[in-house]
Image 1 (cartoon, rainbow, N blue to C red):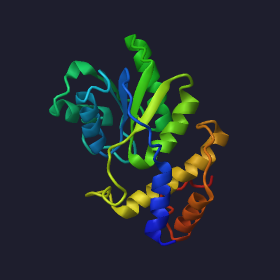
Image 2: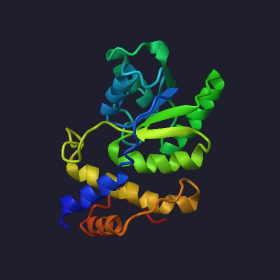
Image 3: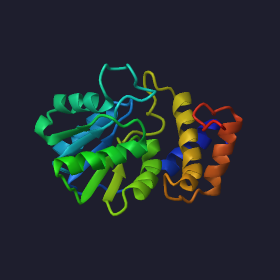
Image 4: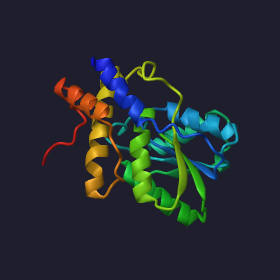
Length: 214
């Protein structure tokens, strides 16, 4: 298969295709992609949940980018989109998905907020890794994973090239393979076609986000 077909194979695998359901809160995991904040505001206005939780400090890809945490930047966009500030909670310390979950749990406990069901908003190609992490790190929480409805072909934007996206997907798929043994995620079945696509892209040099051997 060619590079585009291999990448699209992984992209499709990463999508969980969960149907939206009414929930108690929408948890938005921070990143440099501001489209997630806009999507979360859209979900709020459509009435899927009455509370937005933005989780994210400053990680490698966003350090110094906005002069504020990912959570604060995302919240500012949601407020611009008409979400009332009182409907927003901020978790501003986390630097990875595991910390997003752990620190959000701590924040909600501190605030006395106890959601029974959550919508988790992520980038499309990170849906499956987020699902696997949540299942391991927040057992008992009823949740669905969703992302902005943007196709593989349309996902690149300024500062986020197709090459960058493919590198990110290859790195995320490696973590889906490796992290269960480290206790970070649950196991996920990986179809042979996806494994073949991964190996092909690695051979083609899409290795920037692979875990470096210690």
